[in-house]
Image (cartoon, rainbow, N blue to C red; front, side, top):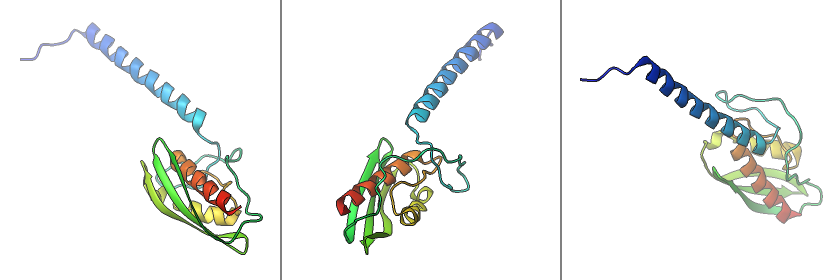
Length: 149
């Protein structure tokens, strides 16, 4: 038969658990905001978006690119993304995600290749809620474009 816990001990235990949880939450939020870029693009309906801010890092402009198809990859603590970037007439004509081994599904970032073609640059907005995937994608595109330069 289970013994009843004293209300004082229950309140103390609950307070300790909530304190630990709160400290972990604050630590996670501080780490996420320190590494998260401030730009965002439309995300799947299940993902909240934020307003755009300053530019993404690692931008490569499409000027003076050699024609061909170039591969790049980007990785971080949540996985990796590989892309194939096709240059035709000195411009980015196509970007394909060739592999996506991230914590979150690929469909969260599947609109980003079109953004690169439209911007003619790796300097595009990130997807809120898929920041690590977005960063790995833009790193992969930047790597491919550096080969074409």
